[in-house]
Amino acid sequence: MTEQLAASLDRLGTETAFETLARARALEAQGRRIIHLEIGEPDFPTAPHIVEAAAKALRDGHTHYCAAPGLPALREAAAAYLSRSRRLEIDPGRVLVAPGAKPFLFFGVLAACDPGDEVIYPNPGFPIYESVIRWAGATPVPLPLVEERGFAFSAGDLAERLTPRTKLVILNSPANPTGGIVDRALNAEIAKLLADHDCWILSDEVYSELLYDDEHDTIAGHEGLLDRTILLDGFSKTFAMTGWRLGYAALPPAFVEPVTRLMINSVSCTPPAVQLAGVAALEGPFDSVREMLAEFRRRRDVVVPGLNALPGVTCVVPRGAFYAFPNITGTGLGARELAEALLADAGVALLSGTAFGEYGEGYLRLSYATALDQIEEALDAIAQTLGSLQPQP
Ligand SMILES: Cc1ncc(COP(=O)(O)O)c(C=O)c1O
Figure 1 (tube, rainbow, N blue to C red):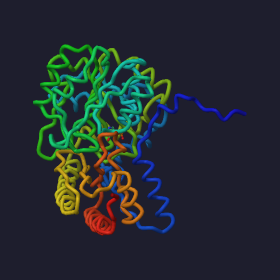
Figure 2: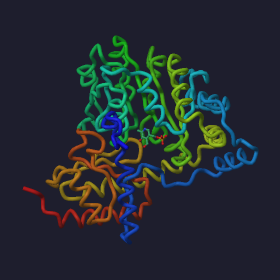
Figure 3: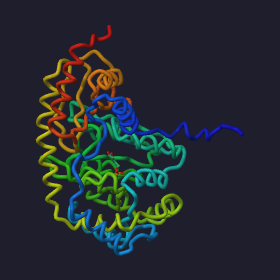
Figure 4: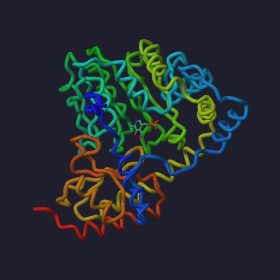
């Protein structure tokens, strides 16, 4: 029997966070103590009223297949939440539900792009963007996020990359891995640029509730763009529900049927009891979301000064999400090399900036969705390892 697999698999990337987590767990299985700053998930439990809604749904017999686009109750709750939080009019008919926000990245890009199309995407950015662009046979066009601008890009940077072949522009605010944002002024400039360009937009807003001082702004709210934007959001980050696998998107009407078809071809539907938990989450109360954000702020205010105190390391203050993205060029070490050394020597699992694209060289990503005492312990261990490492000539 041949062992030859599809050549197209070479185009499919991955998310290093899961690989690093597996390596860290393997070290733990050998008895090593590891502090986990690699995976991007809140360390809080899901709020009890959400858990109870799912338990009740299971007891009530919501244990079967359901409609592929999502339960009407969740499509309506998500449309109401998006309309409320973004000050938009979103019709439930354009909202689809999936097992996580991630499927909308995959299906959105597959539905929008043919081979030869160009897709502009943030870099350093969530690695799945580049992976699915390549998988669709489209050409990834990285849009560098620049530290000096607080990890934003300028409208000029975007304008330079727009061509007649640009089919899709991906935006992510607040951003993984940098904690940067696309603010209202930049969105207004982007909207002006895109008014003359016949392309789709994918706006990944899964961290929209995790903003420290700014108000969230969506590109979909700018003139003429709602019908061109796949606006995706989810429950993983906002409601500490990563393991539930639940997300939703408001799509341009042309995408609703094809993306539903992609779901029928892959996942069929999203578990109904999980969806009913999602309804409870969106209906509130939001107290646990606010408490979680307050705790992330406390941790951010420890981790950023802690990183800035390390030799050769500087770190800008993230405006959203729960990631710090320190510049480590002053250590004289490469990002991968340092990430490896910190796992091996300091027992701290974190990610190289290069896991998020070529413009991530010179940076590390630390998730501070971890208890404060562990963050402090990690900072001490990193300081010790840095002190013992000799920079390569
Ligand atoms: C920017 C971004 N988009 C999407 C996702 C996927 O979220 P979900 O768990 O809802 O699939 C993540 C998860 O890390 C993310 O960081």
